[in-house]
Each structure stands twice: as structure tokens, then as C-alpha cells.
Length: 281
Image (cartoon, rainbow, N blue to C red; front, side, top):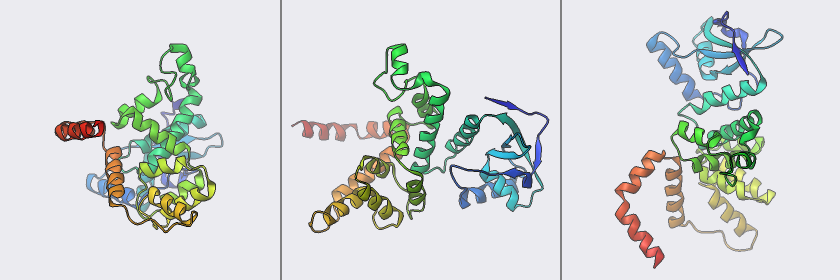
């Protein structure tokens, strides 16, 4: 899918073109890289570019690094130059962003969904049902356990189920919705994305997305309650502190890596067991 052109190791910064990025650069990310370059005196990682047939060099990975170099007034930057397919190019961008610690749940969901689509295009044997028909196990799973979701979960340090939920949430969003939610005053949580994915009424969906984007509500669940109240003739719902606390707990749990989840369960085992017994009663 890709070959490195070893004869090209440096390029003028103005020769590298950024096109159709899945995610815009963040100010904080660029400033952090500029500080690192200033302290170290060098760029820690090379920028990856693709040489097109017309001789143009298009950015594959390293948008923040390239922007930092431009702002620092660099004439040229160290690069790894590839000759590759469109699918390989997008995978390079996605994986570079997934390795970034500053990704929001929204960006992670969008990237994982895009990566799944490309992964299954390149490896059709891992699609739902196909892998199960061949290996006779995991046919009811979203994908072959040995393929995309499992490897991604291991890479990100989260559970396989968490990866599948992120993929589902990202796949349900349209480009316009992603743009609006990225502009929200507070980061949109995975629970919000899952709520949006479940909405089948287009008018309600627009209301929830716009409410989050404009900062009118704290989460999608509240936006849905407001919508239902406005369209049922009932008074707008009062703030439910229990519901709010529950959603906050769910949000923190979903964001935590599996190792942290296991530690939490171990430290609160007795109280959790007691609560479970109460529920059984």
C-alpha cells in the first residue's frame, strides 16, 4: 500500500500542502510542539508526506508539527516521503491522531469510525458475518475479535466494548453534526454521542445537536428532556441531581482506561457487592 522514497528526507515547509483533514489543528497542540522544539532545539518526530503524480507533496501526518514549523519561521522540515494509495494516506492521518493524547471523545469516535471503514475495505474478511463464517466464532460481534476492535482496544488501553461503542457513535454522525459539536463550549462526552445515535426523529436530533453546540444544556439527555417537554405540552423538566450525577459517573467511567476501571472496582468491591445485593432483593 505504501513505499518510502528514501531520496527525499527534507522539504521546504511551503512545499507541503494540507488537504481535506479529518480534524483541524488545535492551538494548544501547536503551542506545545513549539515549546518542545524551542527547548530541544529540534523536532522530535518527522512529518509524513505523500508525493502525488503531479509532483505535489501532500501532508499525511504531522499537521501540528508542520504548523509549528511554519509559525517558528523554519525554511524546511525533516520528512518521511511516501508513494501510496488514498486508503493508506487516510490510515496514516487517522493513526497519527489516535496516538495523540489530546483527542476528545468526539474526535476519537470520528477517527475510529473512519478507520473501521477503511480497515474493512482493505481486509473484507474481517467484516461482520464474513469472519464468523470463516472462523465460526464471533459472528454476532461487530467485527472479528482478532481484528480491528481488539487491536485498537489494546492500542488505546480501553475495553473492546468501549471501542465498539465509539465506532457506533462516530458512524452515526454526519459531517455537519461533527462540525457543530466540535464548536461546543464544553467537550461532548461519549454518552452524549450515544444519545444522539439513538435519535430517529430528525427535528429532535437537530435540537439536541444545536443545544450542545450552543452550550444551552450540559448533556444530550437534558436536551432530549427539554425537547420532549416542549412537544408534549408538559412543563420543562427541573434539574435532576441524581440523573446528573449518574451521567457524570458514566462519563468518567467511559473515559477511564480499563486498568483504572479495574482498580476502582477492586477498591470499592464491598460497597458494589452490597449495592448489587440490594438490587437483587
